[in-house]
Length: 448
Ligand code: PFF
Image 1 (cartoon, rainbow, N blue to C red):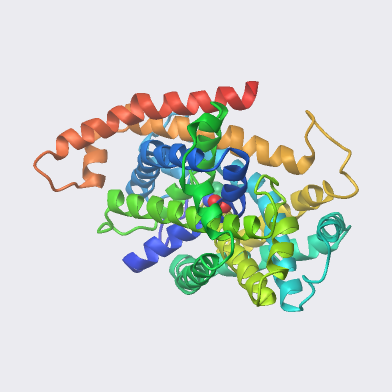
Image 2: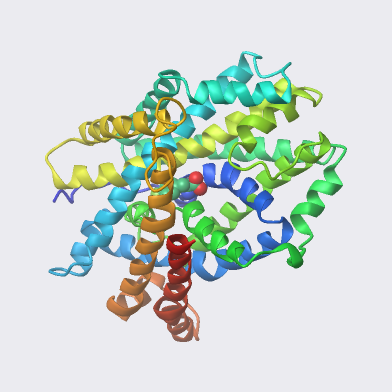
C-alpha cells in the first residue's frame, strides 16, 4: 500500500470548493428539478430539506470521520480502522459503484458538452417542440458521436486526476466553482423577469401536501444520497485529503447547505422559464435537453442563456465525474506500483467500454432490456437505488456501532461544554435513525 505522498487539499476554501464540486452535479441541476416536477413541487422540497438535515449531514460527517482518521482510500480506510474484518467490503462496493456510475454519468456529461457546443454554434434555435425532441433522440442514439464526447470528458477528468489532489482536483475546483456560482446567480436573476416568475416560484416554494404521495419521501432520501455523493466512499476519499485543522461538522454543514442551495437555485431557473413558455415541468429526465432549448429560444438573448445554462450543467457535471474517477483511481494507485496517471488512464479505458453500452441504450441497444431496463437505466438503478443506500447503511452502522467513540470525539473536536451530549446524540442517529430510514428506501427500491 502506497501511503507516502498522498497529498492534501492545501487550503480550507479548497476543501469546500472541491467537496462542493463532487456534490454539486447532474443530481442538482438535471435530476432535482425534474424530480420536484414529477412529485408535486413545494411539498417535495420540504421533505427533501428534512432528509438533507436528518440523513445527509450525519452521513457526510460519518464518511468524513472514516476518511480523515484513516488517511486512506475507500477500501484501505476500513482495512486500517477495522483490520482483519470484512468491513472493507463496503469500500469494494463503493469502488464498484464509482465505476458503474461513471459508465452512464460520463455519457450524460458528454451530452452536456454536445449541447454546449451546439449552443455556442447557434444551432439550438429555430425549431419546433417536436424537432427539439427529435434532435435529442437522434444525437443520443447516434452510433458514435455521444461516444466521442464521452471519451473527451473522461480524458479531461483523467488529466485533472493525474495531476493529483492539490495540483489537479483542488485547482480545477477553485477555478470552475466560482464561475459556476456566477452563472447560476445571473440566470436566477434573469428568472425573476420572466412573465411566469411568480407561478414558477409558487410551484417550488408553496407546499401543497395534499399532492404528496408517500413514495416521495423515499425518492427524496434516494436523491439525498446521490446528490451528496454519499454511500460509496467518495467523501471518504476526499476527506482523506483534509488536514487536521479542518472542522468536519462545519464543513459537512456548509457542503450540504450549498448543495441544497444549488438544487433550489436550479429549480428557480427552470420552473419560471418552463411556465413562462407554456410548458410543463413534469417532463421527466429529458426536461433539460428536450424542453429547455425551446424555452431559451423564446427568451430575449436566447442563445446567451442556452450557452450559460449548458456551461453551468457541464461545470457541475465534470467536477463530479472527476471525483468519481478519483475514488477508483486512488484505490488502484495506492494498491499497485502504477503511477496516478496510468491508474487513471486504465480506469478511463474500462469506463469507456461500459459507456459504449450505456450510450447504445439510446440507439442500437434500445430494445435490449434486463429486468425491464435498458443497460443505461440498469446502471442507474443498481447504483443509485442499491449500492449507494446499502453503502450508506453499512457506513452508518460501522461508525455508530463499531468505531471507537474516542475516534469520533477526536475527529469531531467540538469545543462546547455539552459536546459529549452532541456526540452521544449523533451516535444514536447513526445507530438507529439513519439505518432505519435507509432500510425503508432500500425495501421500496426493490419492491417498488
Ligand atoms: N453528487 C453527484 C451529483 O449530484 O450529480 C453525483 C455523484 C458524484 C454521486 C460522485 C456519487 C459520487 F461519488
